[in-house]
Image (cartoon, rainbow, N blue to C red; front, side):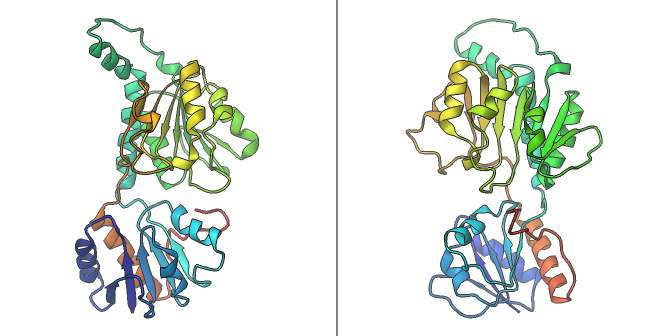
Length: 313
């Protein structure tokens, strides 16, 4: 079988070496502009249109991440770019869930115990004991209950705070109050103290973290965005922070990455910025998973992680 690989911002040799180890009989090559030789499978991250347009016979495209919005965006801009019969396959966990649970727990604890405010007090050399938040009223809402969101919601139960979740379709998760569908969105948001966004990025979810959404949360709520930058309307967040409707935000993803040096999110005193590290792709785990799926497809077997093009995830 022939496999092409494309990824610009990582150790390509390590990826290729690992894939060759797991798929010793495959003809594996690094795709470069001008390469039109046929391939059976593509393993990519943010690949250009040219790669897909010249591979009409691809059987499957493996995305090096859980979010496939970059690939789907290519197709939306120029319909017919993606090979018509190719499966689009996302990574399933590969170590990302544990990282995301850790990140979410850190954010919730930081706000619950007001450590962010104590950091500000220290900078001003003020010795102030702030009243604690009431744990039973510190409701955390997880927006998106996919592979990562579901694990985050369950992981937060250890903190002893109320946890609720929202998804497009009805789900049942023990210990989690689940809301589903557009009709229940406002009820999900009502009185949420920490909103954690883990939705897939689709045309329907773009801009969902906006003034209206913030206004439905508990006054003085906190926002954590670990999904995609375009989910957030930056100006609405800044205005909500200034009004006090939102107390603080932790942001790991942005419209433009790296975040431009002159962006006001860098310097806002109530915004914490991390450089898209909430759940990084772990190379060895991903290599093993992708190789196993390619072998399964070659045997004619079903695999998990296939993306529904209509839904975008």
